[in-house]
Length: 140
Image (cartoon, rainbow, N blue to C red; front, side, top):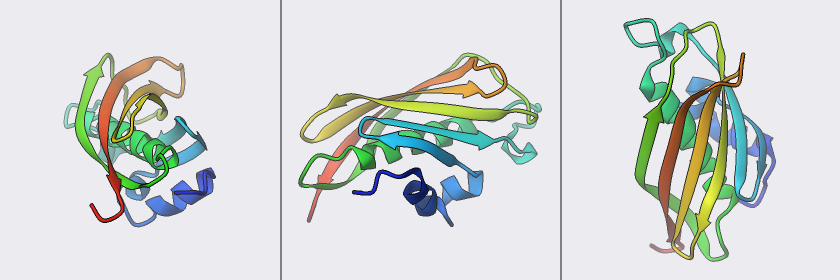
């Protein structure tokens, strides 16, 4: 994706999972992406706290969009080959989430991304996330 404007990523989300979640990309540049998302009651687990899948969906999307903005020449896409999350705390539906995704390794055929998902109200980390992306060239 050659256009590194947040709006282009938000348009890409329309009609897909990130759009359904209401993910809003705030800032994007090579190797970095920041986003936010309002929480809804539907994102909660039956116990009333944030469902882990909500956090993973946000972090994975942010890392994926960051990967698209950071593809080396000759690569046209990617697929996630591994992901991991460490959950530190939770929150309820009255808050919003922020996510900062950062490129840690930019190889010829792989990228490794870290993300931190925080509560918007106080900036406390809810989860740390890491994923590996396998880069795809035209015709692969």
